[in-house]
Amino acid sequence: AAQILVGDLNIYPDFEWPLDDLLFDDPRIVAALGAPCADPHNPSPQHNDPAAAPRFRDAWTETRAADDPGWTFPNPETMHLDPARPDRLLLRSSGLIALNAAVLGCDALPGLDATLPSDHRVLIVDVGPARPSR
View 1 (tube, rainbow, N blue to C red):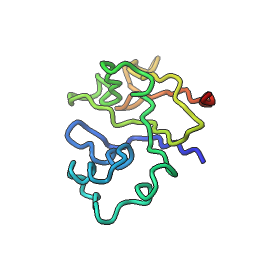
View 2: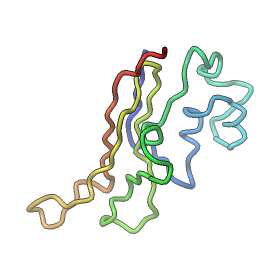
View 3: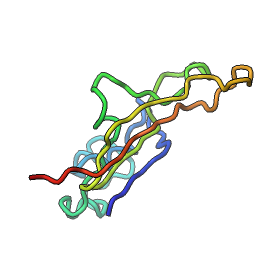
């Protein structure tokens, strides 16, 4: 079954551990990174058989260049904070791939006196079927 996890995962440069268990295959890596929920003696179910449950993949890093940070927070005019990418779309499927990703939402809403739609930008991802391997 395909799974798509989308949302504000509250991941910031100084707080990335919520993503570690979803993206790393080896529970020892998660434990070494210091995630508070990591327990190498009691791994989460997806660690029991990595072949049976593929890892989540980050749609942004699959579709964009390594030097494209994809900042989604803060929307630049709303506050003076360090940029981050808390908003993610993660895929777990051998049948789906991320085709393209973009970040939108820096512009004020028309006619509303420079009101921004959110303190976050919008992450848009096109997802499609993976091509069968030959």
